[in-house]
Length: 76
Image 1 (tube, rainbow, N blue to C red):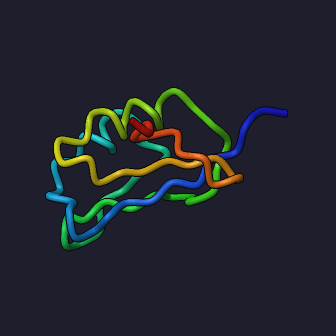
Image 2: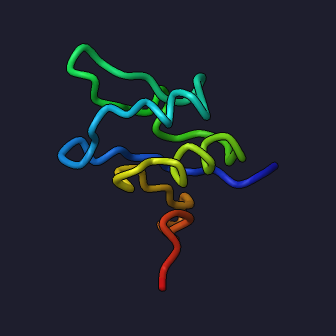
């Protein structure tokens, strides 16, 4: 069994660019205010979700392991 991730979108940062939806259409959607949110906040680790977080122009998406260890953005 692979890693599980907890995915969050900081709605105060989200500008509705939809890059997350473009990279991981099954994992993110925009609401009527064009704010992104994860379809399933707790999900199996996946390259598409990581690409979505990396592509966010305002770094509004954070990913952590179930243990709380950050996946993205990486710790300095």
